[in-house]
Length: 170
Image (cartoon, rainbow, N blue to C red; front, top):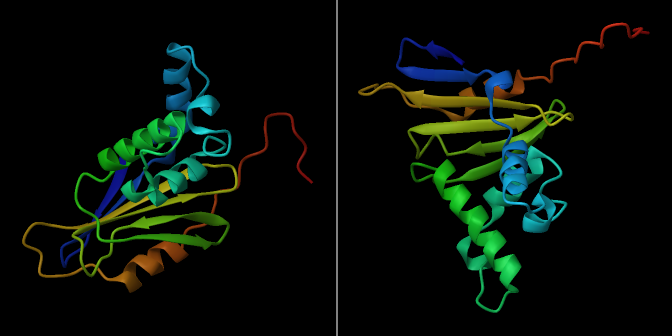
């Protein structure tokens, strides 16, 4: 589910429901378990420690980092991550930026000056993801601007996790 906001000039903002977003690390752990392998053995412990680290590693990986001289396991792991990266970026993306503010860290995928679609993916300290998509209606005369995206991103803050039932709040 998502909340979609249409603006009069043709801009579109999609706020994806955090509870409905797939947890990449959990999905990969399930696949690894079905294949009787450990996810850490496939990608390394650090890469699978959180969804943020997994996404960061994947987004930062480039084909030039693959080498026929690399150990086989490393080459296969990098090739897998590159394949995943290509499925996430269904359209060519001109830039990927990292961001960190208000207790969130994440990435902006796309440059509004060059791309028709920009996605922002942020993670809080508990590895919960917030995902926003910025786009334009077909035929819109308006453009996306970095300052508008910045204003939206700067307004984001991690939600306070409610205390578990029976816990005392001080």
